Length: 451
Image (tube, rainbow, N blue to C red):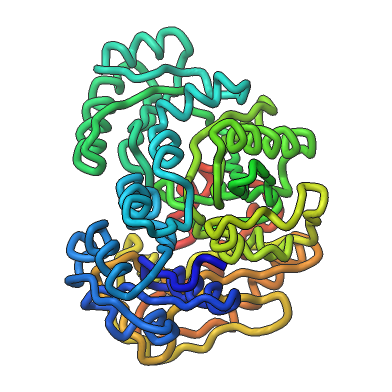
């Protein structure tokens, strides 16, 4: 066993999740923390702590050099980036490699290659994976118009280096092109320091399907099933399910195979997610992007397979081969995850920082809560407002939906405003219960769900 001590270079629920996985494998965990997180839950759980700077992310969690220094000073031989912050930073991965610290994720080249959507899109097409009709880089709105004239409308313009929904605009007719491309380029430059854009066909009746993959350093790659992440607000996922119950079996199999193909072609190592758009009208699917990290929604895949993905990440980084082949992975039942945040949905999802004065989590068979919160915990204004991920598992989707509804009814939080009331209304909507939705459904029904 080479890895003995892991720097957990993140905060919140994912940091606590990684600490527990380290302990389950007999490894020590050191919690990196900002000034605001000195008393955070992951710090309390860990075997030690390393202060890495001020409360704001650009003073702490977003500085690779501080994380490397913290790992060295605390004797860590590995670093887990979690998700968000620098989890998909080739700079951090390379600095870890240069310092002789195992990065619990893919290598810097895989992160760089798949992080650029233009390069990833071109590579997927070369490998026989379907990509949506569109373009490589467009340099101005006139080039985007040429694409629109060729493939028709609506179009979606995207930032090549993008993520989190930034630098994305929908263009429904040629009159919208100039403003949309100009705005998207400005947003992309502000968010990513790169204004490169590309254009592709916008699919109106779409499902967002993503496949969890694992690859080791011995050439083995498997998928751990797919997730349906179609319920989104501003391109941010709100509800995730596994498996993707509302797409045809043949499409599901083809999507899974495509994800494995991509991971094999790039020699991918560690956990990752390959994302696709499924066109419900035409029955086609297209490669979207690859996320080279553990996903927020990974627990639903764990619930239907029994595979601990974070433990798998650590073992892979330690050089272990995957302990199972594809044929060994069995899928059981249906799992759903909702993200509970400290936001006021009725006020446009305005953040609600403060102290949690009451915290009564749901319990029961098939109910899981990944969280860093408790009564007395302080929700600061400096970070993402995620409080907890509520995950349920049942033999069928209908029973999982019923279990989710009951768990949300049982969940009590006071002191900060949360999205629990919004999620209760969403989970009771007939369209949701029936599984009759697409990537536009949540935005289209938001007023009814938050009013």
